Image 1 (cartoon, rainbow, N blue to C red):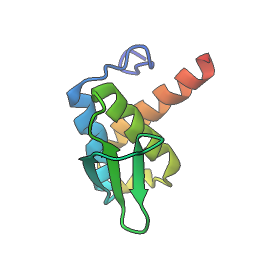
Image 2 (image 1 turned 135 degrees about the vertical axis):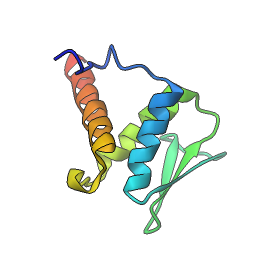
Image 3 (image 1 turned 90 degrees about the horizontal axis):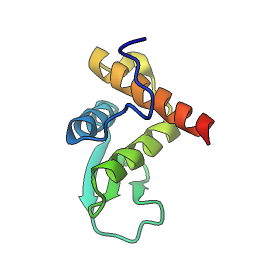
Image 4 (image 1 turned 120 degrees about the horizontal axis):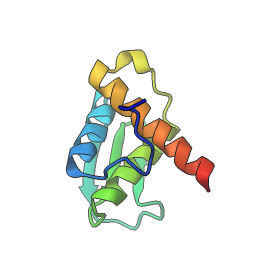
Amino acid sequence: MANEQSMAELKYTKHLLGKVEEVLEELDYTIRYARGNFQSGYCIVEHQKVAVINKFYETEGRINVLIDILEKLEVEEASLSEKSQKTFKQVMRSKSEKEEET
């Protein structure tokens, strides 16, 4: 289990942000960072696969919002590249571990 990280070990870095963005891009989502009054920090443009994220969010906030979006999608893991499958599983596992702690 050395390469399985828990949420506490998950580093909220620009590198992780890029990996999570890549997962969404492989799911044909366009990610835009813009101003707006988003109660949840983001909005999904219906039927267009466009996610608009509050541009004032720091890296950790952006990652959390993208993970929230991923949770709401029906993701067919087999359609993702091996690298994106690993990222997807890692962030979903970490998210569920964090929820179990609270």
